[in-house]
Length: 227
Ligand SMILES: [Mg+2]
Image 1 (cartoon, rainbow, N blue to C red):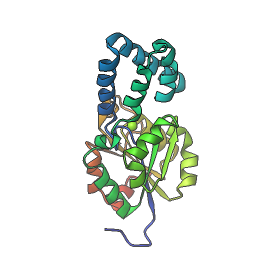
Image 2: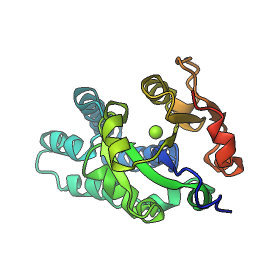
Image 3: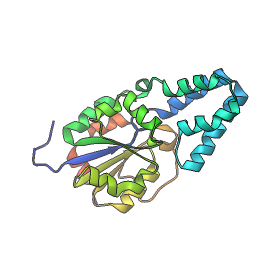
Image 4: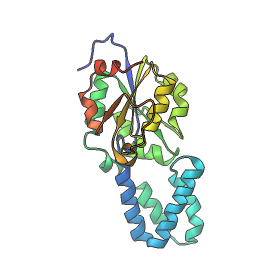
């Protein structure tokens, strides 16, 4: 139920990959299909290019990976097929089972928005085609490193309190260190980053097994973690 109308607004800053959408499973699906299409040797070349691009740009970038992989395939028309595997993926099938119900719950106590790291072509397409963009009224922003853009984020969605939800404890720690009085940080232990045992300081305010667990938290539960 929506809290009293005069309650302070809360903005939920939600990550996409491995927070709302099972990106590890998506990538495993792509890997299996690319191996089946190209064979092991060229599939491994593809993923090497993917990692080189990720290191060079600081983010996953499939459009740039395909561009750089193109000369390796020469004139082979299989490039079109690789493109189709990646871009025509059924993204909605990889939302976590409780994702949409959780977004609806968050709308009863505040405004959920999506702030994702990623490239500016594939990542917005994934967020749109998965149904996530529509579920947050198209309130979506994409950065290379979101924690470097907190001032822009709080300027775009003005509120006294923010709840940042992410599978990467490193991002939550950097955010809490910058704005301890305004951000509550919630770690979702999903995906390979979520299970990383490295301890970041400050630790997340809350740590949950799954995105659906957010449905058990009220605005008052969250407020008590503000510095
Ligand atoms: Mg993530």
